[in-house]
Image 1 (cartoon, rainbow, N blue to C red):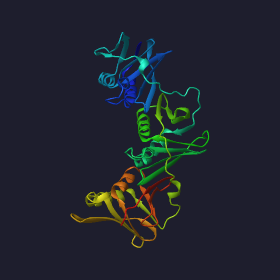
Image 2: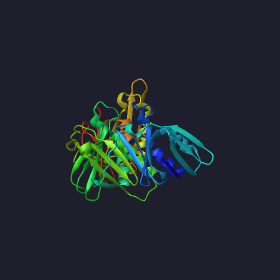
Image 3: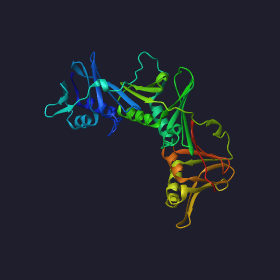
Image 4: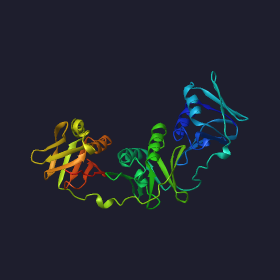
Length: 373
């Protein structure tokens, strides 16, 4: 193998593929990046068996070949050299890389041991979604998934494809987020459960790629129980999570007894004040008290050994007065993941979920389970 390419391009795509490489892989080959050149195209691939990334970059290929190289160390070297032409030549078992003033030689491993990564071939995409819509949906939903593996189905994002929209849903049992986005006509109704990590990597790829391509194509590889996301010249492949996602639709309230339109910043500032005490309370418990008559919303927390505090702000309130308890941490989480100035809060009873919505966006809903008063 022998090729030349630009340092900036090489560095950018090496950084993207290297993110799925763990520092102490179970198999040594999983610490490597696979290079393959064929018919004038240079491909790089990495995998940890759960998540895989493939990309192809522009290069001047003088000799085709296929080899694997330590991903992290190669990436560090390429990142540290100036933006100039990079020459690579594989001789015997060495991956030799050089610029005008820098050289390095890395030991290689045979490509035959590298795991096979699925490709889509001639398969048509299942659905295409605007990359900006995916980034927004992931930001508003992914944080609500469980962070432990006690219930694996809760560590993923449920993707529900319909004829004209796609819904992204996540829950950890204490809260639930759903964001729907409009799409071009899909290839029929389907649903699948994707690990949160895959979506976080996808949003990173979107942020790193300076491309005019505005769509992410999604290919459902049902025979392999995997999904492939394609943006421009990068493919991200993830396994799907097996199991039944909770039936959530019936718990989303269709009405309310109390409705508030409040400023996100006002709510967040009050939460910061109340959390001084609430962070010492079991479950970060605080009380939300809504008064329709005065148009005031107050947050308070009490800890017997410390004391108590309260913070109040204005809101546009309709319906009944209500007092309801929540985890201050869960409320801060949702407010920190919304970019809207005006937030809608709805609830019916102190024992039913509180509902957060965004003014002007009917496609988003977030539920938070209450605590005992």
